[in-house]
Image (tube, rainbow, N blue to C red; front, side, top):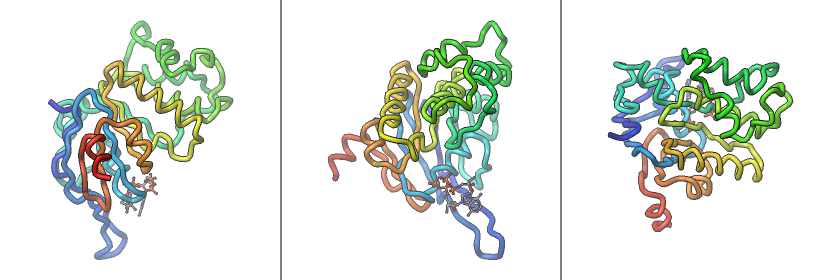
Length: 229
Ligand code: ADP
Ligand code: ADP
């Protein structure tokens, strides 16, 4: 069973007038194998965020199917959501909460009892143990991004999805985030990331799917894709 199965997915955004609907996904199909780092590569406007937002339950698909860990996102939305952790592009937490509180609150949100939470362990995993009690607003941009990743992992999903994790970050931070993704994958997490950097996809991903204008134009193991260039 693949970690994620996308089958003929279509998304049409309604326009403001007649005839200006936007077909953001035009029948996209692919599988994400378990245990891989899967890269969804494409320019701005290709449909990457739309696809991620459908998996996250934030955008409703027009037609087609999506399964997460074997759960259809429409028939079993709760199970699907529990199987996936989403790292959004924007940094979204209260600046006056500490990293520890951010993770504890998220645990509560998922109904994880105080005794079963693993906030400390997650802080160590993203190298933020020494910032446990600092206000989130005092963290550097890189620390905030790492906290977002820990937050997405609170309910121990087998799949982690990162939407443009390194857009607009400097070289050093990009390297740190790449390392973290690699560490999580080594521990067994299936990773999906979107990017518009070919180099990032080549460095990190076992497999790369290329999307453009809402259509999948390639889907290959990274070594085969590079062999073509
Ligand atoms: P990417 O993440 O690859 O940059 P998006 O999924 O954000 O691509 O966008 C795909 C296309 O759908 C773009 O043409 C974008 O303008 C359009 N789009 C995205 N969100 C909406 C929306 N809420 N309403 C209308 N059009 C949208
Ligand atoms: P990105 O793909 O980098 O997230 P976008 O500019 O495509 O950035 O999208 C930013 C936000 O604006 C998203 O929430 C998307 O749904 C929305 N959006 C994008 N394009 C349109 C559009 N044409 N009409 C309305 N909303 C849009």
